Picture 1 (cartoon, rainbow, N blue to C red):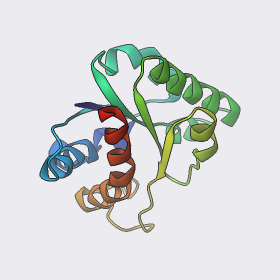
Picture 2 (picture 1 turned 60 degrees about the vertical axis):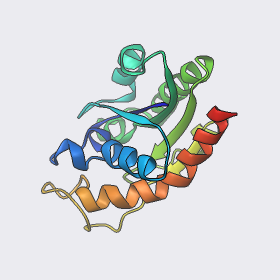
Picture 3 (picture 1 turned 180 degrees about the vertical axis):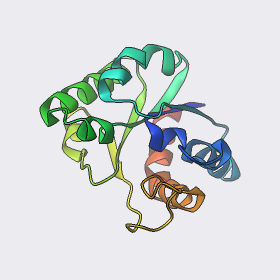
Length: 167
């Protein structure tokens, strides 16, 4: 089963080895639990919802079953109006839904996207790691332990989506 982690630097694993980024850790965790999955890391540092819309079809392969969508922090940093960011995020989710891909939306960095996820029929998880703890050298991105924690937070939702796909 193909899972795509589609996001910005928090997905790509900025400032840490790729093997420590959450997509690699999620794949290892799921495989250890007996799931036959591949988790593709389609994270691009600095990406926004506008950029994500442009690269969506290239980033999310046709055989993808589940897509984990993590965007919005860079939009906020660049002062993109929240309504515009949410509209683009909604368009991403709707496109994935039309392609019959299950979607998990991630809220990160104080950004609550639960209402956007609900409006577009996607599951939602908010990454919560204590401020200042488990950070990469820039103090903003997660280190390997921070990603291990968020994988644990995501795991029940990802397993729910795997079961949906299997049905």
